[in-house]
Image 1 (spheres, rainbow over the protein chains, first blue to last red):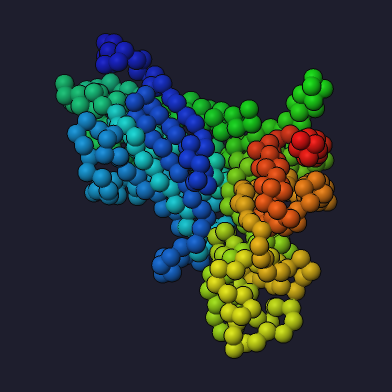
Image 2: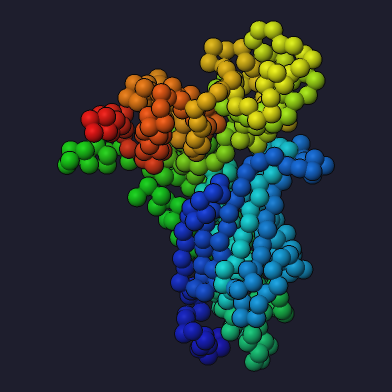
Length: 233
Length: 231
């Protein structure tokens, strides 16, 4: 392959940033969690299943899962205008679709489960941190799920694939430039539930990237499980 | 003290995370909160794993109240219609209490006289519909609450507060001299002679809620109650 690629923060190619995870961070929510990839910090709160209004949104076949993703105004260097944005609603939809296959939606017809994922500090791969936090918040909130959801981002910097990109890597400009791939996997079945590609990538490289992501997700999943199991102490 | 610690450690049960394989093989049966997938039994909820003979069950540690037929619950009247009352039960659906399910005679022309908006009532779940919970008052425990005060706890802790065959509630009732009604939906109504005894009962209940993992809790609460009354 290519000669040794050096990452900005001196990490190995498949090395993740320091992961921090906590549950029960928001007391008044039904379930809550905090998840951080280095400086990308997300906090999520889950509410429900609860009553859904307006009534036309109610689905007699399954629960409505709503995930709100938002970056708090102080999370980035230049103040982000608070409230929903084009980018925010897109990621909200993406996160909802990433979590849905893991939740047993058919158990609570005509109701809603709301998840609010906020980014406290952004340093790339925020949507992955948000999905990880949201999945833990759902589990913590006692929502029946068939498995957990784990997300990780893969970057293609010039021709090298790296795991868990940070902001500086996202702005990499040499050679082919940077491609950012956000992925989410279901913990047990190993199915892909989110795939978002910003940039160019060849099919063979994408396959390789997904393999890398799967491996990294296994590591993150262990941390998620460990954190959830710590409640008793 | 040392002895106590040992008993506490013994009762420690394993915490289970959704998607985890609990056991594999056809000798085991999936209980509440679990599901069979192929040969494996997998967990669907976050909670404590309990095994009785060959049946696995998960006792959830969190979550909203999911009603079941026969549950005694405490709810608030939120609205009234021509034939009944809507009751908020802190669950995914609102409860409905029809007039015919009231014990005794009710003047249909003035339902507000019986239960008005804002009133708290103890009621029982009669039936579950897709969008509502049917309630009934035809039970000895059902009544309108007046006086006293309410506290809210996590509904998953209710079995602990009640104890085996009501042993825990009875202990607190006797220890504090308060009248206590525990709703399965996590609302607890306390009424005593004075505010002091009511707060005392609340303290005891909060103590149980904080320690869901320990066995021999009834004895600990007894001790706690005795110590307080001595002072």
